[in-house]
Length: 290
Image (spheres, rainbow, N blue to C red):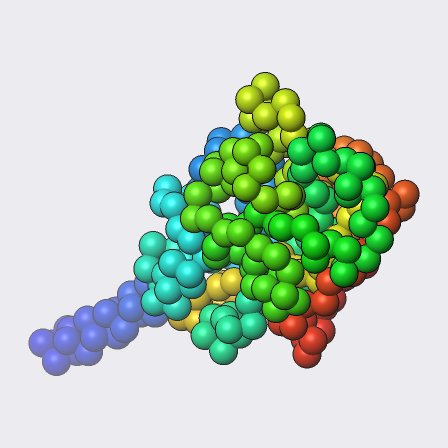
């Protein structure tokens, strides 16, 4: 065999090895990494519920989208700070919270309410000495004569103020309970799945406070998953996953796992419901709201 023929054979061998390499070498698979804020309290069932919904939506889409990582980021953020972080993909790329119309054009919002409309209902934390006064509240006008205690950055605060309801705000969540105890205002409206745990966790210091037994507020507001605009694949994946969880009934099962006791305890069907419209919800479609 001459030198020329040897070089030709070597060239063919190299080409064959290259083909074998690309055919049989496993492709590098993109791993979707979701970064969500870690709950401040380790046993916070609200955060555990949100985490489980996210993780299940990722697990149920592994066949189409491949593997994933879920990271709990240990940081404390107000909604405003979370919005900036999402927008710039800094620290987190996912955030779960109430819908905010101002976010619509800035981040990806998956408009499937993961709490299935439960956030619409608020119960009132009040001083036991004022129960007789609250039993006389029949409508929004009556409620407007009383003063609500709210955190400055809450979406609920914006809604109350839009209706001209009396509001006292603070930046300190723990301070709200002490302020109510000291009669700085008349009530704190909290979601059905929050109010009982929050009160019981702070006993016996708040023995004078109770959950008002006759009233509930109906304020349209949904918990949505928000994704950084730089992560369209993750947004698409989670939406696909959520729709699968709705179709197989699992999203309701997860909700009941964490909140069934609270829902039963709230006994909404036997409460007087006061409706409060939410300007942010006038022009959007709310899937799954009941």
